[in-house]
Image 1 (cartoon, helix red, strand yellow):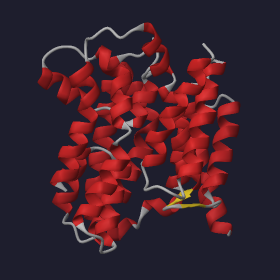
Image 2 (image 1 turned 90 degrees about the vertical axis):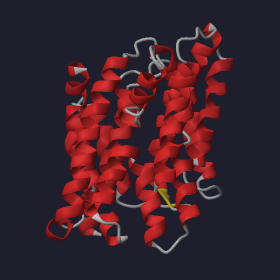
Image 3 (image 1 turned 180 degrees about the horizontal axis):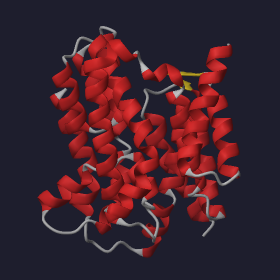
Image 4 (image 1 turned 45 degrees about the vertical axis):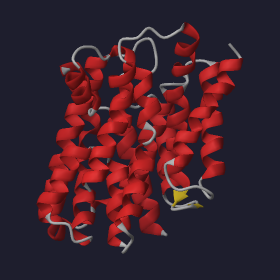
Length: 213
Length: 95
């Protein structure tokens, strides 16, 4: 786990900044600070939390907010299945450990490949959880003083981060084909489907690489 | 928000709780190897171009370009993230 924490350390500032950004957003959507922190601690899924709070802040209904958030998190079903074999032991232990799965912890621990290391996932996940919850608290309590960190290019930072995580995955032609297919599926679906659907639909691109094997 | 939290817990738990420990056939293993590149590529596209339900080109593309350059130069991960943030913020500032 310590090795995982070390591997995840470069992402700590960005995750904390994103957490702060969520904290600020939650306050502007009239959440109280404690509710925002509790949500970050228990839900631990950045984009889904941002989506849910944005929908509510914009006057959307509770049902719409829940659906938007859960669609964004639907990708954790295929993601969870790729690492499922490495999770052993009591069902409650597996349930607890599975909550540390986020895009970054999954990608940095080699999720889905033979070199996947569950302890690295737990290490990266734990560290990012601390960053995320701590960042949320800072943003929710001191947001007015520091301003919204998202205007400093945080969104572009995460786009660049996913480029790096993707590059590490492009180890052979089949996986490159799956990446190209996944990107194409997402790009085509974005205008027509709610956020989250393009990402989970992109998993269909595995068929592209599969037939080549 | 309780529904979002509980739903997320369940979605994350499906794999590790329901599938854990079972041996999957090798062909399925090969398929699972390609889930990461497919999903990460989709995340790059959505994080770069998606704005609600529209595809837009904005300052984030500069961040991605800086990220690609940094990755090509084998920069460490923190530098990729910083380069992405700086390039995005700079273009946003100038436009």
